[in-house]
Amino acid sequence: SHHIAAGTLGILAGLFHLSVRPPQRLYKALRMGNIETVLSS
Image (cartoon, rainbow, N blue to C red; front, top):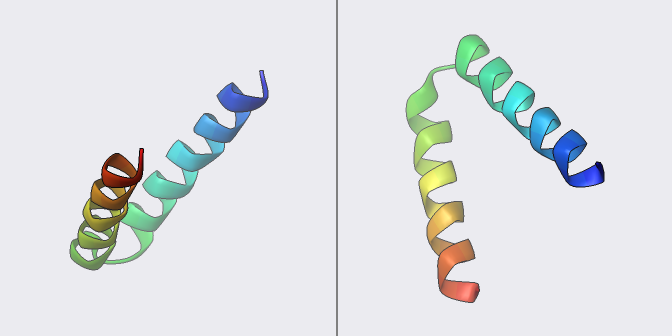
C-alpha cells in the first residue's frame, strides 16, 4: 500500500505542477529523469 500511496502523491504532485507552471521545463526534467532511471535499472 505504501507504493500505491507514493504513486498517488507523485501523480497529484505532477498534476499540480503542470497546472501551476509551464509544463515544458518539467516535462524535459521528467524525460531526463525517466531516461536516467531506465539506464540505471
